[in-house]
Structures are given as C-alpha cells and as structure tokens.
Image (cartoon, rainbow, N blue to C red; front, side):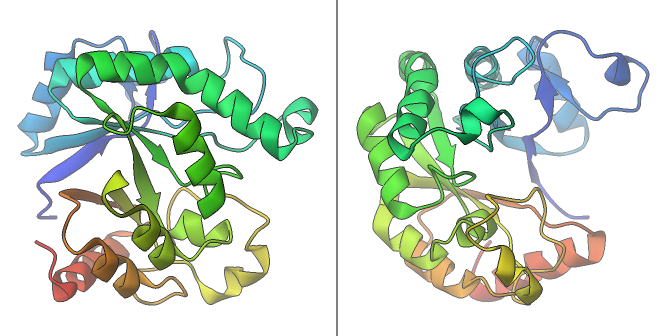
Amino acid sequence: MGFDYADVTDNHPGGLLGREFGFSATVSLDDNPAAVSEQFERHGLTVTSVCAHANLLDPAAPSRYGTDEIMKAIRLADGMGVDHVITTEGDPTTEWGEALSREEQLFTTAEKLYEPVRLADALDVELLIETHGAVTDPIDGMEALLERLEYPDTVGISLDTGNAWLGGADPAEFARTFDDRIKHVHWKDIPEDWADQRGEIYGCGMSPIPLGEGVVDIDGVYDALEGRVEYTTLEIAGDDNLAASREYLRALGAE
C-alpha cells in the first residue's frame, strides 16, 4: 500500500501455538531481535516502535501483560535498534482494580513502571506512555504520572488522538500542554455517534472512519506538534480508510 514504516504491535512472551501454526500475527518478546528486524525488512518496512500496552491497574499475575513483558519489550527494542517502546495502564478487569481511588490508580501504575523506566534509561530506549486509560487520558492524570516517574529524558508520551478524546480530553490541548514530551502519535478519528460514550470508555483499538470525518480536532493536533514528531501511526481499520487518512495527513503537510 506504499507504507515504509510499521510497528511491532501484538506480541507475547515465550511461544504461542497460533503463531507456530500460522493463524496469529504476533511477535514473541523472546525472539531474536535480528530475526524480527529481518522479517520487517523483507517487506520493505522500518520498525519505529515496539508496543507494550499493559494492564497495570489490576493485581500482577502471570496471565497479565505487565512489568515483565514491558521490560522484555524494552530489551527487544534495544536489540532491534528501535528507540521507542509504547505502554499504558489500560482498563482494569477485576473488582479490585475497578475499586481503586485516583491516587491508588496513579500509585499502582507508577510502581509497575518503575523498573521498566530504569531499564529503558540504562539501555537508552525511550518508554512512551500512551493515552489509553483513566490515568493517562486526562491531562492532569498524565501530568501526575510523568512527575511521579521522573526521568524526563527517558519517559515520553505517545498521544493517541482518539483515545484522548474518548477519555474526555481535548487532543489539541493535550498536544499543546505536553509539547516536546510527545514523541509518537497514534492517529484516530472518532465518529460523532460515539459522543455518548465519552468519559465512560478509555480507548479503542482502531478507528472505523478515516481522519477528518469525525469529531477529533486532527488539524489542531497536527498544528500544535509543528512537525516535531518524527514517526506516527495510523490506527485506522479498512484499506480505503487507511489510504484516505494518509492523504489527509499529507494534505496537512506530513511526509
């Protein structure tokens, strides 16, 4: 489709039956980094980030993607020569997680990211926190988390325009507020008929419409960033929507 860049998105520790038998598109965090890079290169693609979206609000458990997996993602990125690992807190799935106060949400998220941040700093990899939850979608929540994590040269932000809007934030204001802490963007637009869910759900995997046809101020985000972000990702479902979104960004001045 004419794209030159992509991300390592779905991934897992260890082995996976579905991958071995060809019906799961996923990377193992225990793969040889060179082999992962070569797989992308065979398709003419350069990897720009490794996604490590986690569940940080529920109690740690072997079945939950959390601190261990984020640290493996950082090591994989380092071995591949990739600068950015993107993570977030996600939605709780247990009664314990759902009952957390705002301060408890902030604490458990920061506690689970403490060692990944130290590892990222040691390996010169940037750990980017994505807007994708009750802590990270609001501007004041992201501010509090960044302050708690410290390491301003290591910890940055991946702004997901659709997720931030769904969480109740103004994505353009978010971009202006955090300025050069934003190192990656996940572009999404949100249909107008999703407005009644705003503030009640925190994020969606893909936008069902192309950029420019929904309620998100895509132009405002682009203008606020002023070309400072080197790589961005289109999280858009459907080939036609994906192509239309690429052209929309190009019309704004993106390369």
